[in-house]
Length: 200
Image 1 (cartoon, rainbow, N blue to C red):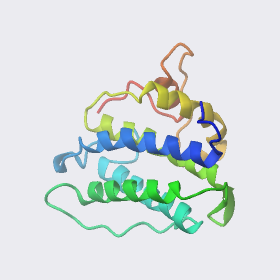
Image 2: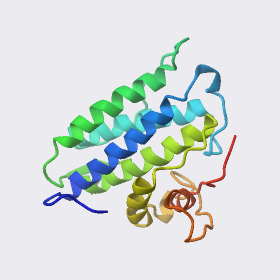
Image 3: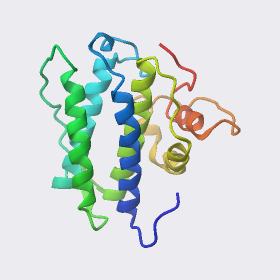
């Protein structure tokens, strides 16, 4: 990934997070109330489950930057007959998230589950999750859009270090085989346990 002159690791992570959120905002525009029970590339989750997980993750990322720690409790939910309330909440958390991360000037520690981690690592993990879950949402809604090549390429440069064996079966599935000649989006998705050709 090419950094701006003088960019710190936190700035680099925040830039990736902003780009991942931009892609995912487009995917969220596809969500309709009648799609909430659609299957997703995350085998155990329907679209509603995935969106609620994403909303909890964005809320946790906001706490990480604003408070220096991550809350593990899920957000309370409410139903809506119009646009799913969780989509509205996701948009709100996405906007406030960038503001909180942009105020970080140092690679300060963030406590996640009692363990301090560099803020840059937390931002990069957040960007990876936001991007691949945005792809999950688009596919669940029947849209075949890939991850943008530049975003996927930059995330791929970090993903092999960020996704550990402990994450497999919890946050990501086992890696899938894919050729090095495939686009960055396909290679990143395969690394995170997703088939680039998945469809509902």
